[in-house]
Length: 361
Image (cartoon, rainbow, N blue to C red; front, side, top):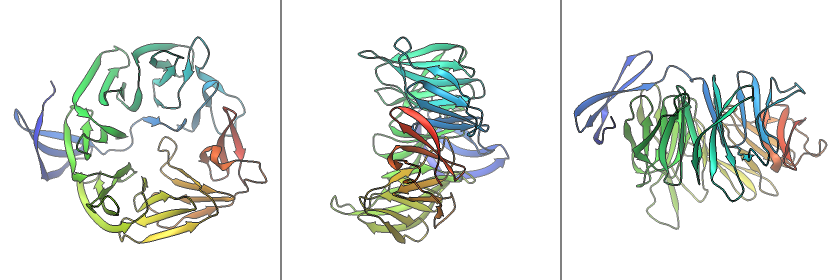
């Protein structure tokens, strides 16, 4: 039974068991205990960028559909979700767990279809049809998505039982283990718990941006109160303690959209800007034209910035980049077509609708 939460006791957080955290909340039926799973990354991944690394193998979307390679160097591939006139065009937003691959097929002048497919690509089963579908998470044999109403919906992959979570409506959905973070209609950051359908607030002010990292959710709130200026108050929601930790404030003209454990990133017209979450210190890496920022937790938790013959790699806790040795020009690579960096010396690029694994150095 779904329960409406009327008040969140933000101070009542205690570490109880190694498998999770207990967060005390009030509901219409009184106090309850909500467990947040912090025991490690569960066996599932979601991407909106068209590539997932899973147990050493790679799932990559192109005109064929979703292709599987047992490792990045293997020339052989298996198509696990076919694109065709009959099957529809497979979208780059998909998810995978140990049992199934979940993907969306788009048909011309028709609704989109959500499928559950077998890992070997031999069978697909239609489980939902809607004009708009956005896969946001998968957890314990359930696939979580939103439609044009921006409401969290989940379906049991085996029984096809569908549940709509009316209390969880918003945008910007990102998953960590059993929790899905998003902004509600008031632009405040909240979290939905997949284990007991609870929805609890995380921030009191409007959230301008956030990313789920390996240690927690990095958050930026615009506290300027002036539409012509931007002042970010950074904070960090830690998985280990399930609480908000206030960090630095920074008055800036840059629009920060991606976050690691220590940095905020803004892709400007002729530069990459970073801002320290701990000290509010801004740095700028200048170039002749706009680069490309890559952050895909379906692959890893590193942030990459590409520009001309440049690839900057920011590891999750790093405050300065590791500059990878690359030669895009020699290898005839348009960095704007790169969708992933693998093992620091290979890239996955889409050319004319087909993916290529290419050397970058």
